[in-house]
Image 1 (cartoon, rainbow, N blue to C red):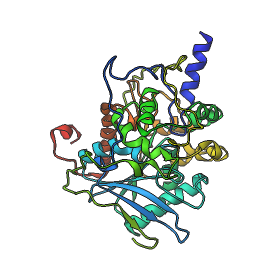
Image 2 (cartoon, rainbow, N blue to C red):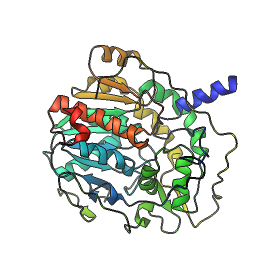
Image 3 (cartoon, rainbow, N blue to C red):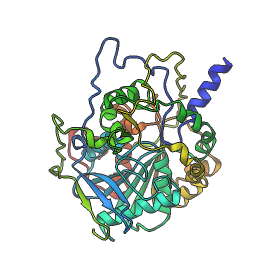
Length: 408
């Protein structure tokens, strides 16, 4: 009983970077015994309408962004530590189908296809400046109304970026599954968790299979598009997204009629329903004891490894979350906190919620920390929650489909 309790505590804590703990179903065949799953990587154009490399300064620092939609308010999506902009693929497809908007998902510094002169400088201040610079270079000095949406580490950066007041058109802030107290407590466990992951994969298919079977990503469709953004090739040294073929990958057709565009490069200087008060306790899954899936040796030099070594950035982790609650509450825009589990709020957040300074919603069914890459119905639920906030506070136009009539 004591060992089981420790496992549950550890599972609850090791999540602040955006990386969920393995589940007890880590190595079971998803979808039932004997059902073969497709682990073939999917090109980004299945979910996004365009991709751009944005160069933000004279040093040549560039950030890869993925876009969907061509008009309306702007949703800026910031991923968790170790993930990439492609982790938002299913979320972007769902939410742009619910409301009239445009989506900008950013590969954060050191992640995905973004390249800077110092990829290991992941301080909150630097990343917040990165977000501001990217938005200004894409949309100029007068961008449309903005809602910053961040998951885990990205949620913390969204708060810091909003607090800089350098983007005056920010109208809303949505923070997904990160609470200061829980995140700070979890930092001590992150090194051992990161070391427990496979260091190397023979193929992209194997990496995708591992992510699904380990519970890191509980949606095979999302894993197929997002995992290449988390890996680099041993042969080319480039992000694995460049090796995903567009063959047999249907390109997205936006509800607004926006057709896919070629990858471009932008040079420097160019341009819910209210939370149910009856909370249900979630029992986190235990770690697997006898895994049957054995990743290849790290000595193999013909496959793929993680895009970023997060362990080298450990000294910067506390800065993401220290003082996050007070900063979040002080921001004078509409705010929403979406949680995957029943995280305890600190005194500041508890008082702030009671005073109506922000809205909170908690999943009542079991989901992983990677909410945005959960099963389709969970991703859709959080998309609808975000849409509801925007419709309620900003009178944004909903898509007129049967699926979202309830939003009006």
